[in-house]
Image (cartoon, rainbow, N blue to C red; front, side):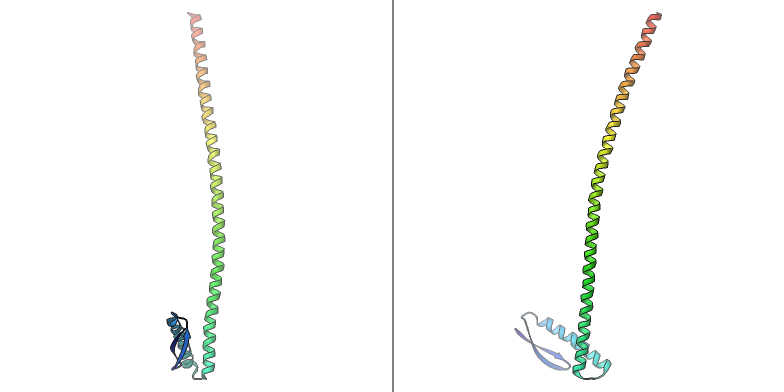
Length: 142
């Protein structure tokens, strides 16, 4: 433990704190003293105890306000995380559906290619038959 001298209401006080916490203690004391001096200026000297009580209540009010803000931020963060998970799941589903659709389209394309190939073969066969028939007819005529 380390002893630190802090000034409050124009008086010096010796307070103890953990090693390395001296600057933080001085900063907190300064903040409380500023609140105290402002209240003394605004309300007049209504007594050190009363001014100290009001200063403490203001500091605690600030702390509660900050705690509430942190809770709201935590809740917002939780909601954002849930939305992110939802979007991620939708993205995965979309990709799966897209892959299925691509496979279906590839399958349909292959079917069309096969039909075109069959039609070309049939057309070629038909042309050959017609050509043979015409040649046969022409031979008969000649």
